[in-house]
Length: 380
Image 1: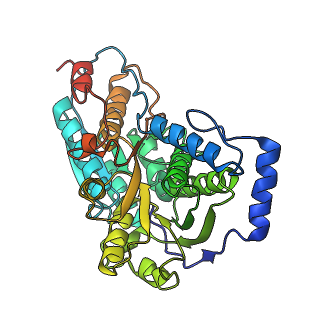
Image 2: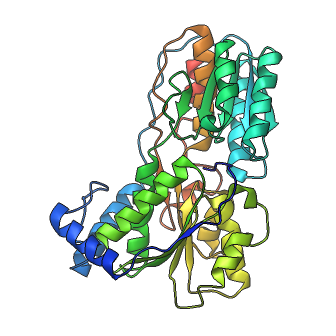
């Protein structure tokens, strides 16, 4: 999930002795976590209980969740939708944009992809262009709508329907059709995986990014890890921007890695796998076998790395990109047709690791009936 704001070099040092003591006090006072199949643990005081809880939670997360039930079939008619891809250099963004275009065509509409190149300014210009050219709707693929507020407001005022796929549900945008997941729970899922993988002894370099969805993931990853596992540690938190996608290293990571020689950290969590996969490659090139990278968004190259052990990857918390793109397109058509709508903000997520990666090597997480369930709802 990836927002595209100016890169910050700010770094925060986390978790000292005081923080560990605070985590123990908090755990004793509050009990376990509200996440996962069996709740929380005792904060790591009993390592066997902690690891048993972690294993149960991870098993639950590997199963995924429920997809929304689509309303009765309707006639979507015809129209055209502008698909604003956050950046086609990002594999997840590219996949989502292509799925949105495919959905529009199968529905009987025309979908045109515009590459915002990770720039809200370019994304805003494309929205303005869609208004001028008489489009019926605009779909932003992961480019946060709040970074394009003026253009989005103008489009809505002009009668276009605006949807934002795989986006943080930003307040103040009640007329935008958001397609989203529980970002906080994604962070909790990854925390329990890291606890399980490290056997409760994780020392983690955490990457954040200037994006509200990523921020929520990181916040809940950190809170869960420190609350539930007193023997785990956040070694540091670093900020990396999506503009570094496609750059060797990436540069921020290459600089950070020099500060953590072998034996000082066990795990790295990426803000999204489009950045995480290059991190894995850098670790491999440097002969670093002591660190495992886990993250979010289920990039296919990362999943392949899980399967063939070609990359130092542990797990990825995936969301249904293709399905979500279809939901975004469907929302635009339903609005134009006056058809019944449904809540797209509760898309399911899934933890993908060596246990279930084989199921997802050829495609992103989605409904067993996809895309036929949408074709049926469109009377196709």
